[in-house]
Amino acid sequence: MNATPNALSGVGIELREPAYAWGQRVIALDDLVNDGSYPDREEGALLAARGSLGEIVNIGHAQELNEPVYLVQFDGCVVGCLEIELVPAPHGLLPETDEEAGA
Image (cartoon, rainbow, N blue to C red; front, side, top):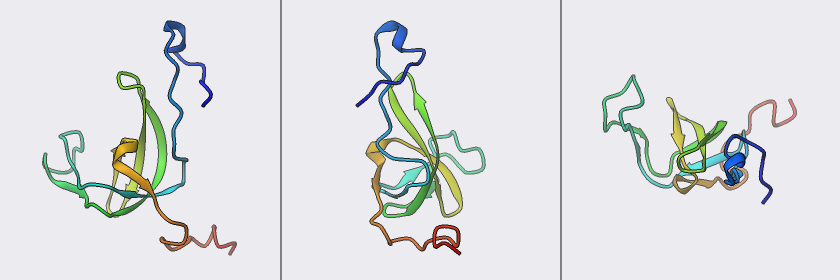
């Protein structure tokens, strides 16, 4: 695993590289509920059920945890997730878009 230069490297902490890629399809390992940070839903509301299929639309980094944070588009909303909340979807599980199918 290679370290990427960042604000933390000056203090001897290496940035943890993401395990998943932008555009990768993933499955939620648990029910993902609103912790209060999703403004359009009640706190505690279900955002994505366990087993929901989604696609990573952006990747950030939580400095205090030194962990990647994934923005995942599930049906109906985009949810911030940690790696421990996701697993890669098997190839072919989700329908391909026209662009991916080469149309």
